[in-house]
Length: 271
Image (cartoon, rainbow, N blue to C red; front, side, top):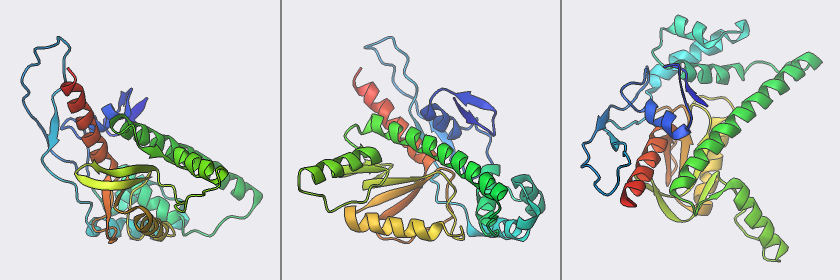
């Protein structure tokens, strides 16, 4: 099950959750597009009901730095006091979504000295394992959602298999990088032609310690090897987050909604 924490609702499919998050019924304090339901002519070839295709009338460009910097500053200031997201929200009176505040706080807590005691190491391992598992599930859900629209795509495991097969045949591939999604041909995703997609289960902000610089290097490498691509942040991102030629930054909610639209259109055309 996939849950919307703001609305306390559960959904069987990730596509249904993303469509709900883009609807007017979703409770959100972030930058959420207004959804317009377009009228559709009734389908006469079948009695199966077809959901209306929805379109977003406001494009997401990211969250202003002026909303992010005070939150990060407060998180850094209080990081030694074991704060939680609610503490930062109360201190700053921010209107950012709690998940985004929690992600910014996580970055600030990364600046704490590493606890090298056996107990500290055990706790850190457990947290890292839980975080990695959650990220893996979110990434897999997104990748499989895109696969429904583009079956010819290669996920990271398939790319590694292709590299291994090439090595075993005596002709190793030169492109050893493996983004989360790779297309052999330029493919349109949410209005942008791309060769690759990288998914990040986080909120993207410029001051994210140790993380954002690595992501920049990763995107530059993918762009130099494969051409134009997209990096997708699950929780959204700060405005003007990256300035890399050929790399677009998008929010998962918007891309998943667009993918769902295209899948619905394909289904309508096959009726």
